[in-house]
Image (tube, rainbow, N blue to C red):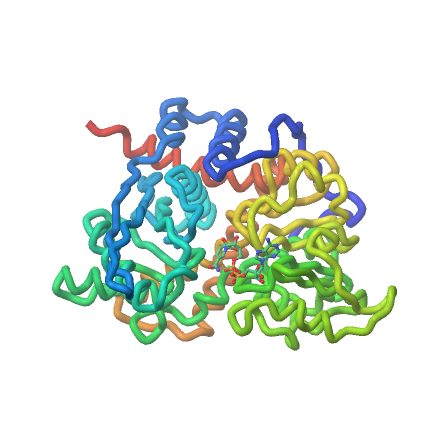
Length: 441
Ligand code: NAD
């Protein structure tokens, strides 16, 4: 692999032309416009890709445990399916909106295309606070939602997966409700299921593993040997904890991790195996931090804002979106940012980081291990054959390194940022498929 001098990280031409208030749809449209302007792609195709194919809105009546009735709103946005069935998560969250689903479905189109998976982009969800529901209510709501969207999902048309507020159990109920109506067991209608009903080994760990793999490749490329590389990780959930643990196992020094309440910082390295992840025990990072007696130069508790600005080699924002903004982009001191979360860097902040020569590995590559192992799960379901964990991890490693290398070649060939390279590769693949298939009728 070619490498560059450690002292000369990549540069990109960009200007901070945007405001910092962004919805997922605004960001997705801006990113599409930005890359479309750099490429020779038919305007008609770009116009088509600026709009979703369809957005399905449904109402879902739920009988609460006390016998009362409440009606919730649900969405399923389909962005593009030119390369294969729609694919994307289902969120249960009070802030779910139609536009958010559309924006996130566009990201899924690019993510699947960057990984060269035969899927298009979808996203959906229910406007509900899942913490306000009992388990029985969540099950009834999920089964009724499955019924309301049954006509627009299916193993060959649209395959949902877990997202914020949903989990393998939710997918099991959805798969069961769908299968009951179809009269046969159809595991391939959703991914992210428990392995006992057709889920894949390694699915839960996959987004964090892919973050670790692309971090490792990027560090090698820019001459940061992992054994001499410091890493800060925001968020210690499925993505952050798995990425931190793998990077530590591969030799990096993870100096800071955080949860929603704050961070723990140890210049000599945090023992990430000693801290339970969000799944294992919610918000355990700050409890661990409370046990530290480090003094000003030793291990200590810091804020999430301070974590983002630590002088480390690699920063991995793996908690929530919009944490690197125009307000703090100038203070980011890491040389490399690897986006574990979806959309952690705003459009304006991205331009500032680019101007400052900070390398940003975009979310649509970095955390794409999730949808990649979802693809493996779908293949296993269709073939009625289970892969071992070792095979899943081997194939994920190979797919991630292939996708990373394709972007690296694009970065070198066109002298653009990694984000622009990712969008260019994705848009090229999607638009070429559109041009080849043509417009019907
Ligand atoms: P999670 O719920 O397992 O963990 C989230 C972690 O972030 C927790 O440690 C939580 O305490 C912390 N956190 C929450 N709000 C925070 C805030 N405002 N500031 C700092 N920390 C905060 O979530 P996850 O599954 O690891 O997902 C994290 C991100 O990665 C999300 O953006 C998600 O969309 C994205 N992502 C997840 C997957 C997946 O399959 N899990 C796949 C791709 C992308």
